Image (cartoon, rainbow, N blue to C red):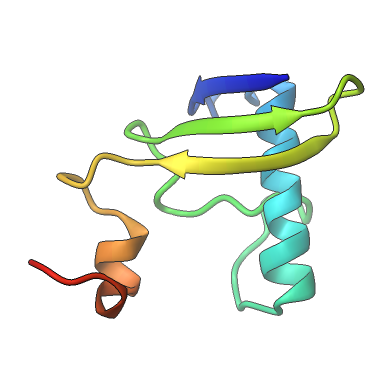
Length: 91
């Protein structure tokens, strides 16, 4: 099942959002050992998870996270422009 969600961190978010943030922690903090904070020692949530973020999240029938993408307008700060500008040509 695919979900298209916006950020709602104030109320704890949707189960699909929680599963995505937990999966991001497993990949970026636990596996890749990036030096990032973990919210409640279980979620990777960063400055780009803000009111501009939308998420495409794929979960199975049991709600297990299968894959996701964070979508941000390029007119707002975004990870590619701020941290990895060398990966794309242009301003």
